[in-house]
Amino acid sequence: MLLTRVLSALVLVPLVVLLIVAGGWALAAGLLAALGTAAWEYTRLMQAGGYRPAWGLTLALIAALILDAAWLEAQLAPVVISAGLLVSLTWQLAHRIPANSERGQAGTATADWALTFAGGVYLGWAGSHAIRIRAFEDGAAWLLLVLAGVWLADSGAYLVGMRWGRHKMTPSLSPKKSWEGLAGGIVLGVIGNGLVAAALGLPALHGALLGLSGGTLGTLGDLSISMMKRQVGVKDSSNLIPGHGGALDRIDSLLFAVIAGHLYLVWFAGLGAA
Image (cartoon, rainbow, N blue to C red; front, top):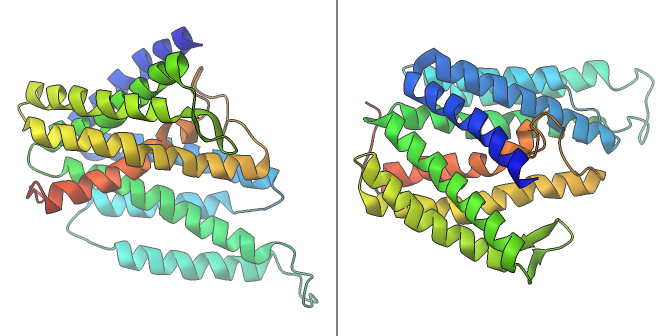
């Protein structure tokens, strides 16, 4: 299992680094491909629970938010979210509720609309923060630092948890996660990311604090998707990535981290768009 995880990471991490360094539309296209796949997996998860979110509308909302972030002059996110809310609800009215329906006969239409809209905003809005970080001065290095904090914390939590994990965090959501693993992830995230920051020519303190964020908030992102999977009785979002599950399983912790990382860089590191 560990070897499979490592081999998958050896393929994926260089690809992600290349897209980040390239930036621009290459990064936007890569993000859209990953988030679109995650949205498809998310839709299948909800279908396993008896719901019917509209994957096409979720994908359209994700694409609009990613493209808006890539075209920073536009700043159309409020318009995109507003339009997505209205269109997704109207689509449910037109396609999911029978003309002769009475109270209680509309099935899961309201839940389907909420899941469609929430999935698009969650994946698209969170993902767009990666592009916003890349737009900062030295944005490629900063984005790599934010992601490295999560990767290091995840690796530390996995290794320490496997060896010394005794006290489970949330057995009902993630039976393998332990408090010892969380502590190990935070330690490796803080120390390791400080060193990564120095190697990238960035302040080590910022790297350490972003590692702390990756180890804590990244765990919350992971548990959030675990909550959804447990509700519908599914272990992994898919088997797309050997040793890691699906795209949604792989990016769940990153979604929280890029939002927190962007806010940290704006509020505490004093960065703005280049």
